Length: 113
Length: 110
Image (cartoon, rainbow over all chains, first blue to last red; front, side, top):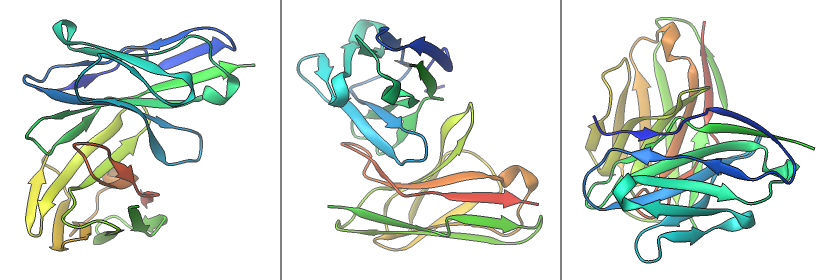
């Protein structure tokens, strides 16, 4: 079945540590890829997106993600996290020509000061 | 810019009662509209999406239904709520390029 997979649902790390969150999808065809973030008590908001072109995408707040087509992956990274990065992070996939937008189960990230 | 109105913010309903959650959108026309349910550890589960008036795609069989009577109105309903319908329901607009989310409704079925 088509799906979006995010592993390691709970991630705890210290400030200044590096963060990498994995996202794999099982859809065929061309895809649009997204990472959304939900800070405590706030709406979901877009962190970054990939449609085409350079597979390394830079987003807000120092986040970046790399699309590796051969691995069906779109992993999120940040070299040095801050306490304010404590949030839940969701990967999402939309297949071109299809209006369905599917999300992964999310990663709850806690950054310890 | 797009604005999503979703209400109510919280709702407590008895088992077996009906449900109607409404989502309206401003600042766009002919949008793709979505209903998601968010649960801890389960992420955002896509329930329904709609690409136009009267057009509803259902993702999972369940006790819920959706309708789109107007271009910018999307309604989530149930005839008889179950305990398992408790959760946080989110309306979203967009999809292919970027999705924007409403504030959500926390539904507790008692």
